[in-house]
Image 1 (cartoon, rainbow, N blue to C red):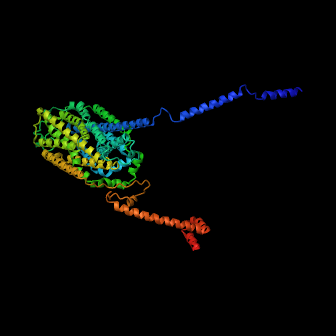
Image 2: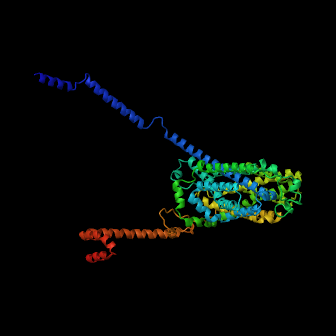
Length: 623
């Protein structure tokens, strides 16, 4: 009995006793689940405070600010790297020109001969730029091409720590290789930023959402603004390039009585740069440690420029667009710059491209040395270039007038200013060592900077306007532009020993020819004469070798291939029809033969392995 009582008590202890108010607890649990479900739906569902249009507007506003950041970063990066390059090159050439510096520090090197070869590498190598520039830009991308070119300029700065033939000359050749790709990438990049800004402003338009071509003239105002901003910032490089000269080297230069003692005449009457210029220009040699500090500071700024291009500059194209640009085939990329010269607009602008290179280098070398230094002395060299650079920068704002004026105003105004100055310089021959001519020479520098600003900014804007809707052609167009500028720089390098009036006559003739050709171009455009552009083949992402040339021929233009396209379409339609009939007949044959066709399918892999013998047997069995 006792054991039975213990067992019953143990069972009673393990029984679950229903709590009081059990129904109420169940209702409470169900209510909590409903409350949690309602909170989840409220959290995951559409928010009452969320405004989709407002968020979209904020997103594209950030995109537009990013484009402005890209333009400023590219402009500042180019300004810094060219300030470093021109400042170091100027200081290096002055030091190496001094006979005492060469004999004391590098008596057995022959620095003067090294300088000649170095300048030859910088000026001659860009002639080949048309052959490789489009391939480099499309292989690396626009942004990475700018970064790589800035790295080459930084490499040139680093070679000055150890001045030897095997360091200076290869670095100069590398600079010559990078000049045309850098400038073609910069022109392409600024124009692409204008196109992107238009897309982010008009993101609701149907053609923007479907990534179609931009309507004609839609982004012209952004091209004008962005190219003007780039020109304003970049031309400050002439100002900052004179800091090493004005702050460091100017204190070591001798007085004019010694430097210009053998100079008899200046300006239009001389031949070469400065005949009779003394080969000793330094009062004392700068300390090596001071030169190393200057070069180190320039190296730091070169690295800053590289970082700006790498970090602050965004991509010029979408990733899919970059792939499409490369996928037309490297053979076509190599040929297309030459074929774009079929466009009469580009051909007629070639004289202006050449003049743009001639006049800027003449301002820095011909006018500054043969007129300025010859008259005022070497100590005033930095002042003439600073005034010229400030003038170029400030007057670049005038190109914003193209927002309301015809596009020919900018180029015509710059050409008119330079025409007057060239005529004046033909008869202007100031005597040496006469500081009274400082005012007129500075005024000529200001006016020449005005003409340079209008010409260079006007040409860049004009190219962007003419090809604004052809974003896949921009790298080819800007490559031709800067390649012809490089040829003009090579011409200036060759004519250094010519008489000054001969140089001015070449400039004047080139300017008049450029104005005439530009007038012809505008007249043909006004008559709505069709221009001829080479057809860019469609991207082929899985192409091998050069088989794409069989189907996509870039030699023909868009206007010439209409009849061929119609014939190809008819042939493809016939092939498709016959192919459909054959497939239908094969299906009927398969349904009628049944087991024989099944057996033939099973034996087909074996027939391929045995050289097709079993397939002939199968066909014999069918017969």
